[in-house]
Length: 105
Image (tube, rainbow, N blue to C red; front, side, top):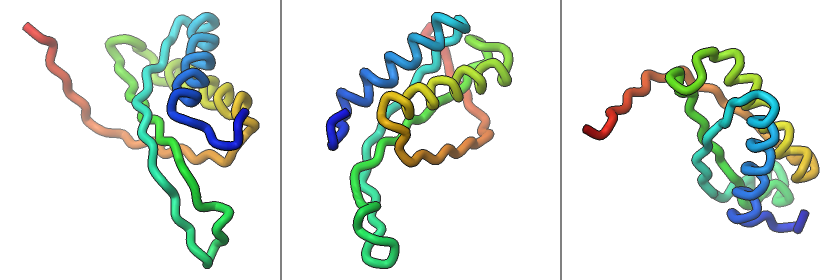
């Protein structure tokens, strides 16, 4: 992988990992990709400063009924992405929220 990972590279990497998991499980995990910049400053060391990528994933029980199966597919994708990118530092936050959507009539 190049030293600087661009948005287009991240999209391709997610797509590759997601398609592989989908082929094995039948579950495709959609993602929203946001980029930001992490600032640590002198206290933690400037080597941690840099671009970050945030993938937002929402489990839709209409598409995948089992949360456990969805979570397992998601975990496999994250591990696939990490492997392709050389196992970079990653943290995962899981929020349980009420999510509503309305179908276009």
